[in-house]
Image 1 (cartoon, rainbow, N blue to C red):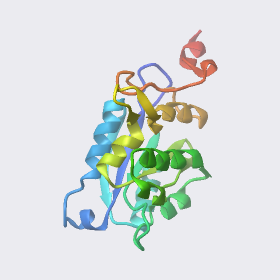
Image 2: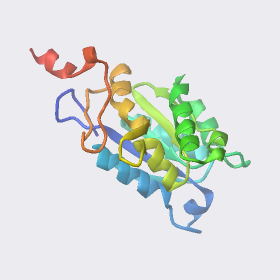
Image 3: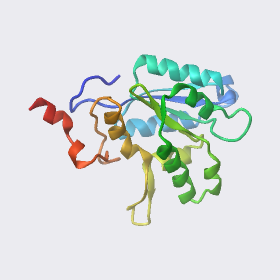
Length: 202
């Protein structure tokens, strides 16, 4: 896991898949591996996916991740409206402060991609200690769009993805100063927060 505060530090991330059927082996987990691959491509050191049933096992997996000191915990699945979709409720048991803007951006990206039902997603996001926890939908295509954002026909950014804000978020909650791979996604920080690790060495 990521420690310290230097240029070589990366985001330590855990992926949790919430799915009763995938946990029972009825079908393979399709969303967790996609999420782990995307996070790894962006520059994270990724563990998982940890596949657990919906409900309280999701809370237990999150609490275990906090004890292990991950910078980011990202869940996939369990954010809909069926009775078993309880990931947001489990998340709110764990986080200390909610970050509504992340969840709003996730729904906005889905709607901008032409999926009207994206606004029905109940995913939450927030902070627990020095860990950021984010709920993503259970569809691989939606995961890619919300993390990376949307591009127009000329491949220019049209709707920003949420991952660009994650490194600065981790700064703000007391985590390490970390960078992404700019060829994949560029971390956004205010000018006065850029390369703060360098200032601390001078």
